[in-house]
Image 1 (tube, rainbow, N blue to C red):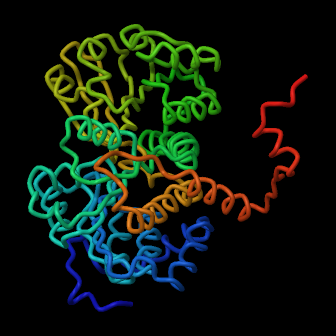
Image 2: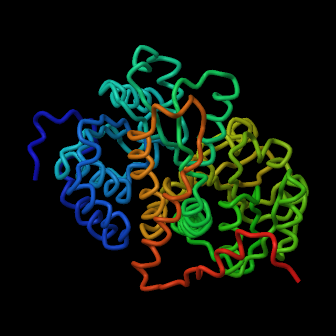
Length: 424
């Protein structure tokens, strides 16, 4: 245990630390790639003296990423990337047992959320690590005096990558950022299998409803939505997908789902989940025609995908009927149910992604931070993909940890693929 006297922090209760540590240990056993990186980082100390401000979901998996970064010599400060995603016992454990500053309390209000982001930025980071781009946007908007010392950053999620690419397009981005979300070992697994399982987990924990036989509407058909649709179908639900992209809509239909406009799906759905990264995907016209008893959840990063102000305006009464489940009684007597205040349901009402998929996502984070340290002078202020060699290394380490061996190209096969002379 570390003495906390000189470790800046703002967490709910440090006495929860031992409970958080046990959960961290449970997650750690499912994170073999991070285990290998920790051993390597401890020996080589490649991040010695690097200050990192991390704005991530404060979960057991994130705690284990912090453990690896510290083993590599980094000085890390952690703040929450969503007001409802913090696990308070884990936040305490990171402070007490890892000796890392943490500024995060589950359920914190808007003012506290941004005060915590500023507290992380007060450490004058060399590298930012973000999930949703709130840290980066705050730095560029309110703390511009710190920009000169920042050499690069990483971004964890789709919403953040969209925001950062918009910043780069406008010429506003001042340093290079690696889009961890776009790594194959991230979005193909974390977004699809992680979001799929954890979203269903959050809905069931919040409501305890049976999914079999329900009409389950998924807004969007990106990698997160694919995972949600797949898991809902596996639980026996009749899945409808709504989309604005004709190619994704066609793919959803070919995958066996019904596809229609949200205004039509709104009349049929029993459960609705948004995962698009956009605003008001479920809007007032949709709320006005939903069934009595419809359940609404959001699995996107921000709580804007469901038009909550419109839901409030349509309602005459609101009450908390279960933990993380609010009942809205509309003027015509219909009742709609909102999970987790419209915030990302898998962390607001559950524990987030399983550690086995976060193992790869956070291995990408750790190795991308190292890449930035070693290559930042070569990088312009743009959004970059994770280098392919990092992606492939993580995939190979994960396969090895699962006891899986794969083939390698022979010299003859390699030569054939690189040539054009040989044909029919």
